[in-house]
Image 1 (tube, chains in turn blue, cyan):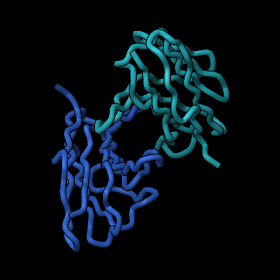
Image 2 (cartoon, chains in turn cyan, green; image 1 turned 90 degrees about the horizontal axis):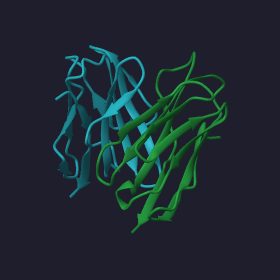
Image 3 (cartoon, rainbow over the protein chains, first blue to last red; image 1 turned 90 degrees about the vertical axis):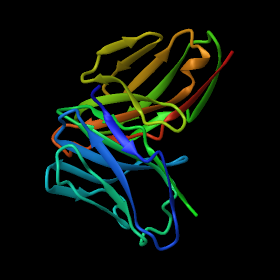
Image 4 (cartoon, rainbow over the protein chains, first blue to last red; image 1 turned 180 degrees about the vertical axis):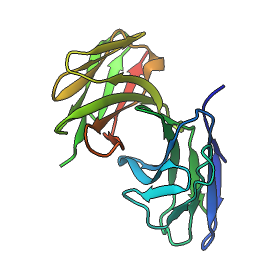
Length: 110
Length: 111
């Protein structure tokens, strides 16, 4: 089945800890994206990548980092600099037009 | 000013009570308008893409329409399983290929 997978489904972060969220796609899409979703705020773009080894900051990149070493993979690291990381994180990919989303990762702070 | 505005924020319907959700946009040129359905705790599920005014698309009880300034998602005879948040996104022609999302309409259909 073609699609986007995200892992883990739930992630707990301790104070001062960096955590990495995984995103993999087998849709052969060039572009990949990370969004953050908070109640009442809609989707906010963190980072996006149009091709391998290239990525750009979105609207709320501070406290986050990404890499794009493979076309299929776009991991997101939530660093200790992100002071309010509790949210639902969504990965997406797109070909020519439509974005397709993964199932999401919920990040909680201990 | 938001480029994409969805209304209402929340909508409660009785089973079988048809209604419409609205997505208005202010981009200068539209490359595409997208509708998604999102269930609690899950990622958005793609429903439709509309490209030009007058275009319509249907899927089961859902029908999406597009004018030059807005799109409607019509829900005919809804069932409780249609309860979800419906998101609209717009991609502007000639600009960034990143779509702009509205904040969504939360739909609850009571049996």
